[in-house]
Image (cartoon, rainbow, N blue to C red; front, side, top):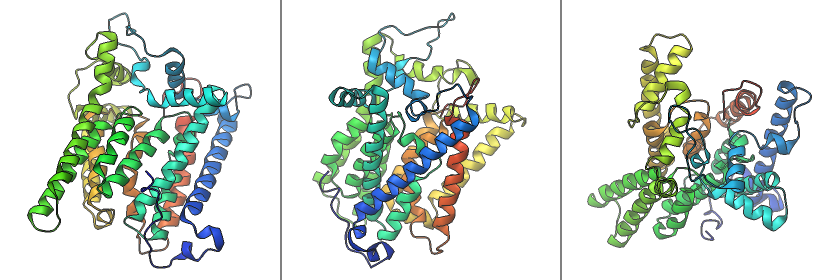
Length: 411
């Protein structure tokens, strides 16, 4: 980790390098951006709450930061995981804490015990500190491909993206992104053995291990292809280390399912718990990889009044557009390692996730794609993207985060 936080390699002077005194330090610039972005998100959250919530509802920062999944994480911290799964009258598994991985709530509990802070406050502290760490490491990650100004621009876009509020509230995203970014930075630097603890830990913050295993398979294939053509050396020790990381991601990706099985005696305890949340959309249907998005496309299409065939057609158009973006010259700027990761994360989501209101949040691990904006030739690209992100953030907070009676749009 110390190597990961080392100062970036020297680049041609740019506007960040021309700042006075201590402001020239990359980490100072990143932390200023981080604090400013969190102030903006906090003001937006408080403003949306004042607009949408009744006068007698809680409007304080702590309450507003502990909504939705935060309540489940608190339950995990206080009560742990049930030995018996809750069932409805038909025998189907209902929503329960097994859907929420343990690393974040247990880290928050540790911080709460050490600092004597209430759990709800400690959760905000953990998320904000992890968010700051993510910003620093994300800059370092972007700096492996871009000069200082470009890396700072990409980091700024990450910090104000439309769902960036979740990195300061009692959600596990900050911790997931911190550990994931550390792993990606080590991957780019070919420090495979050092990746192992981060790969394991991130898999217990959010389901991430299987996507990492897929990305490592792509990374190994790409390096081997280059090795065979004499473009890059891929020594056997490095190949072995990379294979170990891929295997670790695979094992860590299935570990929580095995733990839930052992604790409850139900082989599908974790997956059935996860699937219980999509039952309100499509009922209890067997899981088939890649089918959830087709099912979701049909459901959402009919929800907005489209014919049954139209939803899958729109989905296909979106997939073609995403593939075109991944293959575009802009996306090639982020380098093969990060592009493979972005593609792997999207394929993972496509395989297992049912599209609904938390889809936007689930896209966060693909944030290295933001590096495509870092080397834009037009000086207007980054300001326009930042402005669009702020508008999207305002809309997302009002539509998804602020919870009102009857709300069915969990973030």
